[in-house]
Image (tube, rainbow, N blue to C red; front, side):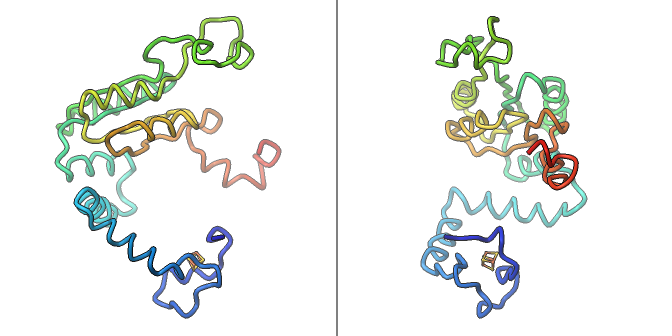
Length: 205
Ligand code: SF4
């Protein structure tokens, strides 16, 4: 079992293979070779190198939004998908405008598309946020399939719920990046709860 999260050696950040902890994943030399070969596949090579070089170019200067736009431009994408949450529809408008301003064609799909009541997909009446009312289900599979149908070259997830985002990633044909990770409690800054895990958030985690 690998436990990088509790490692204090971090030999992977240096050229000191003799320091590897006993259960370090880097002992899996054959697997690491396969990994390198996987990056070399035509469908991965350009994307990975472009993303990595952009990381260096805008390092500590560009916000994620700009990194996302620059990645689309550097990859030569002309048509991108924007899968967004209804709760962030104002933010989606801003992102849509900025993407278009950068020369991209944007296909956007809201999470509530389909307008299907939650109970129709098996969610219990008590499992609704407001039981007893019509409540449209979030529909990440539809978001993915609609964008697939529109042949988007790259998809951007904006504020999809935990788990709904997973299903969107699963069904999207194009690679996906997450621009905003939804966190209703922290203004969509999940790291805040991590930073305050031993403090203000201690009793809420
Ligand atoms: S890869 Fe090895 S050295 Fe790096 S964090 Fe994991 S266990 Fe530690």
